[in-house]
Image (cartoon, rainbow, N blue to C red):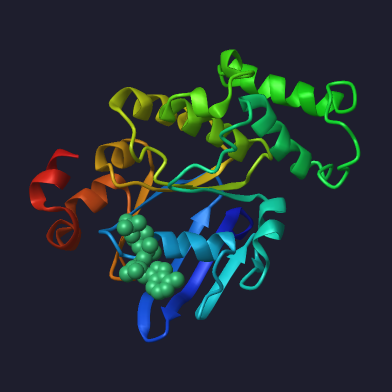
Amino acid sequence: MEKDKILSLKGLSKHFGGIKVIEHVSLDVTAGERVGLIGPNGAGKSTLFNMIAGDLEPSGGTIHYYGDRINSMPNYKRTQKGIVRTFQKNNLMMGLTVRENILLVLQRINQKHTQWWKQATPGNYQLLFEHAGSLLHEWGLEEYSQTKVKDLSYGVQRQIEMIMAIAGNPKLLLLDEPTAGMSQVETDQIISLINKLPVEVTIMMIEHDVDVLFGNTDRVIVLHAGTLIADGSPEQVRENPEVKEIYMGKEVIANA
Ligand SMILES: Nc1ncnc2c1ncn2[C@@H]1O[C@H](COP(=O)(O)OP(=O)(O)OP(=O)(O)O)[C@@H](O)[C@H]1O
């Protein structure tokens, strides 16, 4: 149904000078879908995310979010409207504690970040401190509340970053390689966190680990050299001859 369409890309392109990095990509995403995005290095996956998140303006085509054209909307406005993105490398303040990092995000979400004259104490910001505490409790990371981020393992850092991404109740969550650089245990932890997100949160996830991607999405989109070459269920994409040929190598995808 039209009202359930959260994102619609039509003929989306991005050119850098003469280099066509994304060419005429069209797709619709329905609210609540869990969509995986794969493709070889340089296929244009991050560039597509950059355009959806508002970090890059398209060279052609349109992006609609809940029916509104957002091609030129600045990224902070998209964030306010529920489009939230995580990056391949983490974005945390290493010298601050986990709670302080979360408070910074909550301060911004609640438009309190311009009150620089006000000391950030539990007394002054009771609701924010309570919210930070309840987020950490809800996601089972309370024990790290007072730990400086630099003293945490990489896997826990990425979990904290995920909590920061979901603190503002995103509607469309763009996850750029959430398991990159992780051990198997850390990968399992972050995937379990992603799978616990409310069903109404729409997720688009770039992921190089095909086992992770095929097992945790209900739709897979394949980009190759900037064009969309497949879009279907994990089973359909796994059987797609062009995908087998161009992207992964037959054995890898057969075992996925
Ligand atoms: N600002 C830019 N200027 C010029 N070329 C760029 C720019 N950003 C990206 N590119 C090029 O666009 C192509 C696609 O890059 P992109 O990062 O979107 O690919 P990707 O599929 O995310 O790759 P990876 O899996 O390696 O992260 C690459 O060839 C890259 O060099």
